Image (tube, rainbow, N blue to C red; front, side):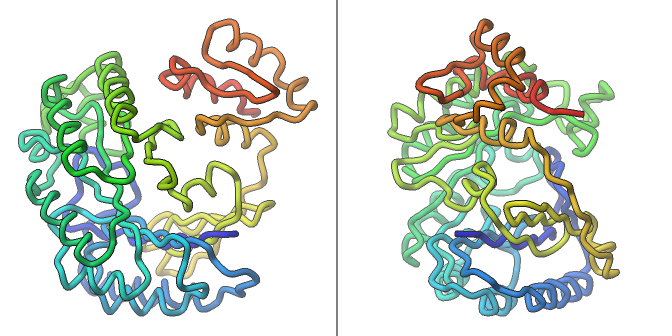
Length: 358
């Protein structure tokens, strides 16, 4: 069954590590955006009932409950099997949590990133570990017990000791799902740009290198597994039965419809993308078609720890890179299934690159 993604690219501040298409905008722009988003949803010809809904950002938890209700009430299929809203710690109140539940939200993804105050402050965030604990309690009081916690390995000033402190909080709070991302260093974030330019702002000089960041990630894999939170995708870990049903659609190439700036849609054959910027989206610029990629199943499906089952033609087509990565211990195969090894996960970008055809 397909899913629905709603993009809400508005934030109270831009975090130093963030490379998403989001930002801080005047309230008047946000109001216009909600009108445009509602209009786009209303144009959809629903040929199927959505199974999942996902509100990503940006910071959707900053949306007024009335605005959220207005959008969700025009999406068919309620009650959805899974309806997720991304939230920034410090933005959740009892009133909001109750309103979310009334709208059909049954899962919240918290962008915690770290439970260590020094690391949090350097990202531009203002929450504390206790804020997160209190707000998870607020969500559970509203009968939203399915909570994901995002962590980032490789933040400025992060050490094995401080990372262990964040993982201790995971054990204490016992979420159903945890996402662990290794810091991306690129020109699209303030911290990434500072690191690449050799600067010192945002604590760039104290950012762990690739090897140390990989070591922190491996610590998380081991600790979460001991807690019964198993890795099922490169960056995602869950207790049995709590895997993100919506995000699995992306990795399994199942259909989904995207609404809002920079949102993508996929009907199983054709992929479409909305304009990336809020300004272009509001101007009425149409969707851009993205032709299908024959190799997409490899660099998306291999993200899953379950791996993929290549067709005979695919084994022949990719025989050389598959053989090379099997010999190098980055891939393994059993019963016709191809999957990344533990070492292959750490070098996954290099593996995926070999399956991308020009």
